[in-house]
Length: 193
Image (cartoon, rainbow, N blue to C red):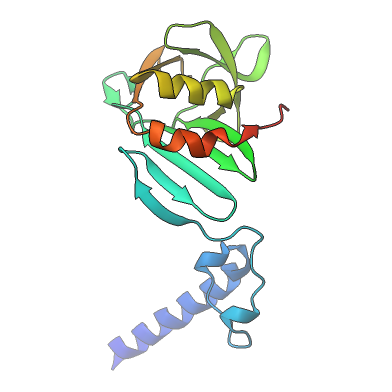
């Protein structure tokens, strides 16, 4: 009998905690309150993304406003004998604007004299300054040029230094991107900030 009372108490406490964080949760995780149905909840401006295909190891997601292709780099970031998860490269056509970025998992080293930017070298070319966004995201300054580079090379080599790791050479296979290039080329470059 005591076991049943403890279980009921735990369930009531869990429901009370869930109710207190209900409004802070993303819409997909919210449960309808007893006074509302799912159709009465306000919908977000962006439709829920629907996975489409894995196009040559590119994870592709598309909806009414967005086409996004993502792919992991070969191997992770290595520092002091520890290998972190591989960074992920993303390219997206969102509302007619083209974006490209890398989610690294670690903070990129900031450029001296240019806070908020990281120095990135693509395929041994000149240094580019990518914007450091929230968390561990780096935003490409010229996404159209980067998509063109992806479609003309079998591999993309990205040289980048991290706060927790020395200079790293990240390698990304570009196979399969050609099938998506025509859909991405209809985008204009995102406005520079």
